[in-house]
Image (cartoon, rainbow, N blue to C red; front, top):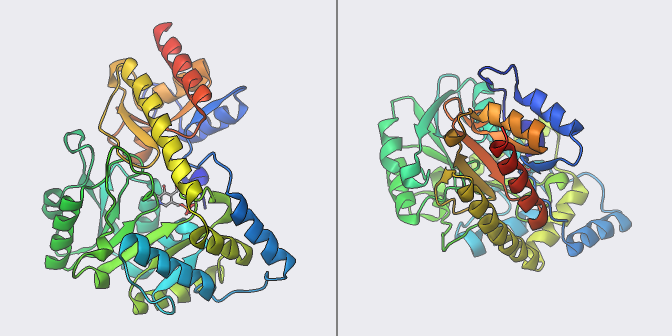
Length: 389
Ligand SMILES: Cc1ncc(COP(=O)(O)O)c(C=O)c1O
């Protein structure tokens, strides 16, 4: 399931009787809508990836695959993890290919979490985390993040939330929705804490390639003592503009991969075979398209930040992903009201912060996923609507 269908959840609209489903329905009917809402890349999948899918079809490589995924793809994933992340796993036993990383998230939580287990999650957060943990009967423990640290999770705040029921920590860097990148030194502190307190770490690294202003990505699974307690979660949707192909993966110790694979076999057997061949080409082929997308987003990010700053909004340094998480309290509206207002008065869709956590009604998540001219138009329309209220 892509981000499209999962975020954000219903939130109160204070005085207005509006929820996110109403907003989405309204957005679908809005002529000349500019969406700064959904988090799915607007670029096309690179030609060599599409050609690999065509070849697989032409050559009849469309039949069933092993539940764990094609060995060619598992090898490509293991090589990628070693090359880019310094995470070393056995392609035969320590990798599972999934139908998007969203499926991986649900399967791994279901396999890991027993009723009553506590899972620490940074707040604000990607809403599917809540659904996955709730479905497994786990207890979500929210670890606060704050503007003073550019919303990057802090080891001390995690420590303050630990109890004897703490089972796992869900890490996401760069973050959706805040775009925060946890600095390597802080990540090392988090790793030490995980080892000391025997925590399993689920590391969602789906935005790893989108880094700006010198930010660095460190995979927590590469740190000493972390290999055996880390589940690395990733997918091809963002880096390769492949949301619709539905390929994700996890890398983790063999016993865990076995447990998750057994569950996957009962649910949808394996990820689509043609998409897996396309994913091999994505991971093993030229990486220019990934770099081009990052450069494009770096430029758009400047355009969006300048525009939001001119509108008087505050935000952290937003060093990753393709989002800006901005405080909109200066408008005098809460996020749901403002979302509704911009949709109606400006034809622009922006997701309210309250969809990413109950207490975030002063924030909105803006995406960078429109060409410059459309983004400038969106900024102008939003500003005009606010100035002519
Ligand atoms: C943080 C995060 N994790 C996982 C996913 C799921 O991505 P996919 O299922 O397309 O791999 C998303 C999608 O938006 C996301 O933002």
